[in-house]
Image (cartoon, rainbow, N blue to C red):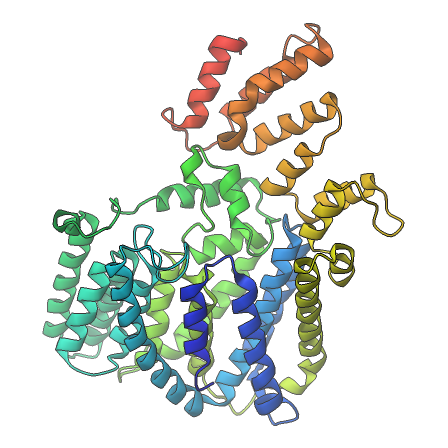
Length: 522
């Protein structure tokens, strides 16, 4: 583990969040390494209560896979979570070793991140790829990382902590500042409970409030530092509403692990409202896996917090866990494998040792081997696809919709399967924005196109309502004036009632109003 976190950190600095194969491969490699070196055929255990919680998690994850709109992505996320589970087992059983390695690596990453951070500013935020840890889009994720060395006080002293607050401020990360504010509120309440002095904590809390006000009011724009203009909460309320709307309408079945972007596209009222996350990991998990996922989530946090919250001594690792939890409730940092790994390591270290109720990990060997085998075939499929062996790629991984797209585009059969079956297969694998758009682009007659386009407009109005005149044209060419646009009127009226939070200034409602008054009478 000596340099694993550093390598993972650099991979997510120089590659964006969509290059998930690299970070997933690094996570798998590390899991294999610790499995064979530290876990296999050794006296390794995990408390039964936490084991049952994680089994419940994985059962729900596999259940959500069946209803996933992007099964390939969901499978990769599932494999990642299984590998994180191996990491959790390792962290629980080798606490002293893990703590030492974690602190040492966080120190090295701290120095590395400062260097890269200022390189990024010198190059006007254009040096690193979009959606990497150091890319500025209102703020970067390095500001969020700085909360860890701040909470752990890695180098001791007030000057070090003030310097870190300065770095967080110029990163423009409101989520990081708010996370530390919540943490200091917890510290003050705890110190009052144990009758400890709180003057220093109150002063730092006041300073943090001032820092949050400066960042939220674009203070640094006055000095021509290249930040975008930001609001107090940005678009978070929009993303929260998108998640809540979907959950209220689909409480049992989610869109599949890692597919929140599908929810966002469906419930966007403006083209710019789209996001890969609700910026709240609990809303993401519920939207992706269904409301039942709340049961293991609540039980897990209840157990872990109950075991650690009333420590009289300072428990900086627990406070780091709390800081990341607050962060994950307000930002999409949890989408990065780097943050997930740190979070899981902290959980493993914080789970209390117990002399009873252990579960022997040796019984999980078969599950772990299946995980390694699955990812091996996923990698082989991607290699075959990149070397233009499309059919071989599909044999290695039947969920590889990119290979399937090529077969459909070229009107090729696959083994004994015809085009019509391949399109149905593709639609089962990827029944989301890109999948539906691709199927629409492959329609072979106007009537098929008409119904596909109608489906796209209803499902993704912010993206496809501008094509409503095309739908009218198809209607006239196919049906003439017999139907009097009955289906179109129904479509527009249903779209009016689709959103719980109506905004008459949104692009969607402007389109609906225009079409209802100018083209057809709703």
